[in-house]
Amino acid sequence: MRNSLLNVTLALVLVSLAGWLLVVGRALLLPFVTALIVWYLINALASGLRAVPLGPCRLPALPALLMALVLIFVAATFIFDLVAANLTQLARDTPAYQTRLEEVFASLSALAGLQEPVQMRDLMPQTSLTQLVTQAASFITTMAGSASLVFIYVLFLLIEQSTFDRKYAALFDSEGQAERAFAIRAEINRRVLHYFGIKTGVSLATGLATTGLLMLAGLPYAALFGFIAFLLNYIPTIGSLISVIFPSVLALVYFDTFAPFLAISIGLGVIQFALGNLVEPKLMGSSLNLSGLVILLSLAFWGAIWGVTGMVLCVPLTVVILIICAEIPQTRPIAVLLSADGNVGPPLQHRQTPAAETAQSRG
Image (cartoon, rainbow, N blue to C red; front, side, top):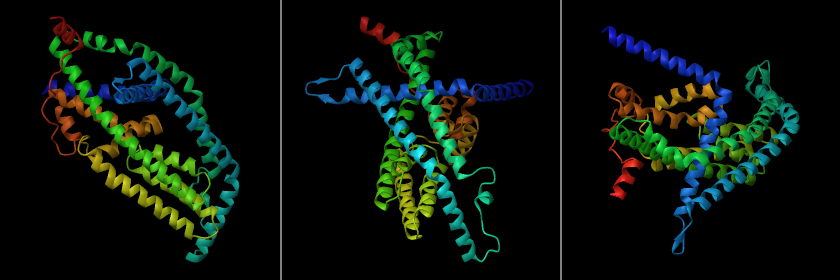
């Protein structure tokens, strides 16, 4: 009993210390975490390029990696420039939109028979529309400023990735432990790649559909709101709601009548519901095996620690924790609690380490 209590106490202290380090080291960790995501995407894209048949041949590994690196950073540069330009223009127009929003609130208050009209400071007492747009532009500028550091991290990860398997195998004392660790890593990679692949496809479809609808309706900054919908779609539950609110509020103040506002709000809601509640669950299946409540708690936890980046990564990080806990007998109950149905499956099948594969090929 005393040993169990000591183990629980030590585990709580360790978790608290890890959380404190994640918060304190946020400025140092976030660029590296971003670089890990970019490095992972580059390798996934390179694998996809190598899978494309070029007649009887396929693209070699190094050219595929270089092409993926160029494509990722060209796309990132284009998106940053587009978003920064749209946010700059929106920041100039925001005072006029805020005045118009106050007029709309006054009209709605009069229709509702309120003695005092609702004002912006009643809804957002600590900030204004201008401050929100300025903060968003500052966030994009900060991200662009840290892009050079992220690029350096990515380059070193790409240069050293050929040695990762040997280092990983050397961490363990026995061949069996190494095989189990490689099996866990393979399962993590499979589930995370499956999640990001489907999520990226659905997010891209959401962003393009949002942009097309707003352009058809004649609302400005359609590309900006499409990118916001694409990015926020990675955030579970609240992301889709926020991506509908922003363009709907702009439509409310941009057009003179309420008909475009209703059309845009309903149209965006239909897009989010169809892709997020019908298409994505069918494509995702039960591969994640995460409880809905756990996803919400993870969203709140990682969002409090790492902000938007933590919200985007909350599902993959929780999947990683579930897989690792399911492979350790002492922490398997934690994996059961995190899962959707309590079934975390049997222990993973072993796979051979690179050292064992090399030995077999020599034999």
